[in-house]
Length: 270
Image (spheres, rainbow, N blue to C red):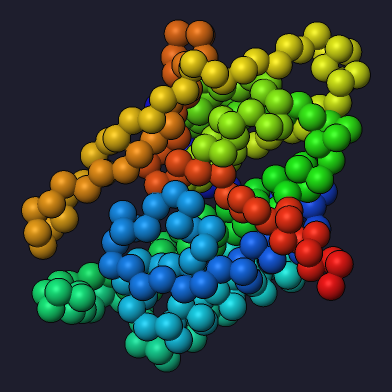
C-alpha cells in the first residue's frame, strides 16, 4: 500500500465551506506542554495543550503556535508558513541537528527545526484544528442533521483500517464519535458529513449503533532509546461486519475539539 497522501489543511476551508474562526479558537484555548517525544502526549491531551516534540522552551512553542494561528487566519500555504517561520526559529537557535539534554540529564543528538518537521507541524495541527471546528459546527446543527456518516477517500493511498468505516452512519450522539472523529492518524484524509432524517430516507441509509462493536486495544509504539522502556498507546477498534475492522492510529484515539461548541457559544454570549 502506498503511503497516505499529505493533506493540505489550507484547502479544508474550501472543502467544507468552513470559516476559520472555530479552528482558530481551538488553537487559542490550548495551554503549552514541554515534551521530548510525541509518545509523551497522546489523544485528548492535545485538546488541552499545544506541544512540539523537543521544543523545550516556551518562547519557541509560542512562536510556532502564533505562526499556525496566522496561517489559519490568513489562509497561508505550507510554503508561506515555512518561509515565515524558519528564520524565526533559526534566530531562536531551534534549527537543524543539535545535541540536547533531556529532563533526565541525558545528552542526545536530535533533529530540531527543518522543512520536513515544519510540514508535519503545519499539516497535523491545522488539520486537527479545522476538524475540531467542523465538528463544533455539526454539533450545533444536530437537531436538523442528527446522523453522521464516516467518509474515507477510497483510493490506493488510504489506510485499509480507515477505509473499513467508509459510508457507515451513526447518530451524532453515539459514543463511538468520541474516539473516531477524524483525523485518525497523520495525513488522514477522512471526514464526516451530517445528514438529515429526510436525507437518510432519500439515500436509503440506515444508522448503526456501535454498542457491542467497539473495543480498546493497547499497542506498542516504540522503545525509549534512553531507558529501554516500551512505549504503548491505546487505539479504538470498531468491528464493521465487513471482514475488516476500523482502527485509529496510535496517538489519535480521541475526537478533536471536545467541548469546543460549548466554548464558542459562551464566547458569543459574552
